[in-house]
Image (cartoon, rainbow, N blue to C red; front, side, top):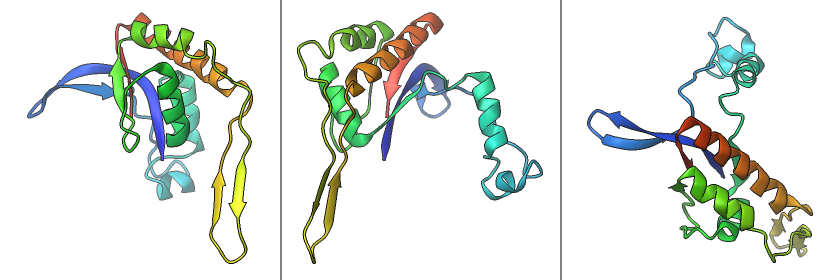
Length: 157
């Protein structure tokens, strides 16, 4: 599972009213005739990914594992449900939080833990590399800046 932070906008949807919609309205899927991958994966293939990269519609999205997203949201000071870490904020709200999120906090990384005993299940808890939170907050600040430039919101789900 993962959580994607992205640019969002309010839209009127018939039968639902005003809802916050995350992501761009671009569709870069390819016809099945494009290649064997497009045929098998409903239009998703390397060609579609290249189209998406050229468009830049997802350039500012930040995708994190649920565990890492929980740690990032906690550093940002957001209240969230760990079983469903989703929310929204103004670009300025996220930008302000991202700029101070690591003040006084350790960002030296954590080691991966492989906890296994013979005959028992194996439990692996992935660590984070040194500087992970600084890099992630910089990416979130860039996302907030672009959302502000576009006059939109920021959401995560």
